Image (tube, rainbow, N blue to C red; front, side, top):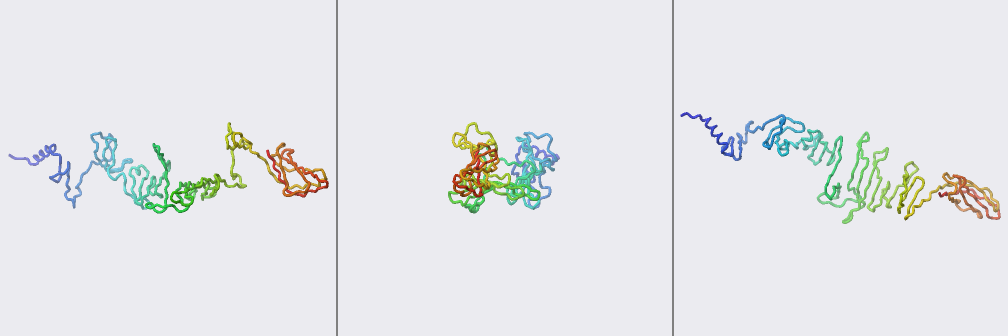
Length: 393
């Protein structure tokens, strides 16, 4: 009887597959469900390998639960999916890239070696980690240790749902990270800095800075806080507000010596040390409140609101004529704002002739009359001198 050997072998293989749980290709002792041995481990052929089904697009109908773990090789990028191996993740209903294709080695334009997120780059956004430890979002060449760069919304948000709220912590130390020590005297601890472009260059225009306020010692770490801005016509920021370790706060004063220390004003408009905007007084006076209603300034020392006296001060040089005994002479001084009935005080600068007395009053508006009387029994000719006039509303 003639036997068809190839057909018989195929018969045994087909019927043996359900029986044996392991299949070997190029070997007779498979060590797994499928065990493939190359033609040579040292000099393999260019055909020694497995070809996973190659596709140029994902199926229009997604695989199902039975295909969970099914593998394919995408030959071209599709949208944000780079070419490479993918498996079907049925529980999450998505194709998942396999291996290192999610992060790929590369270099930026400056020649720095890095790894970048493939899917993000395909969507137009760089996410990189350089070999020297810099991290960039929106840039492949981060300047700082962390850099976020983009044309649109670059908000930075820290979200928490805990009784311990999120914190933004700046920590600086002397010595090394492994062996920290105290900072140098008045050393900078950390800063939040703002920059912009002035039309020529990128410039630093201010920020919030924290410094040691003196020297740190065990159990004592005094600090101060400074806010800086840049004035018109300059690109150099200046200190505007300083809070020292004592709690003293200075406005345009770098070394405040009071709880609130304000820089003195100048003759220039808009440079007054303190200015109140007109408002409405409190319905019920509050102790310690200072108020301005547009015409009067008020202070409440306890429970009663009191008007803070306001007035006008001027000086003038007056030369009274010869005054005979038991008579008087009048001269006027212009005091804009003075009204009839206002209290008026005046005095000469320095000593005055014996037997001279004086008083003053407002009449008419904006005019103060100074009356000098001679109470001696002889004529007196007062010398020309400066007089100070104070009108209190």
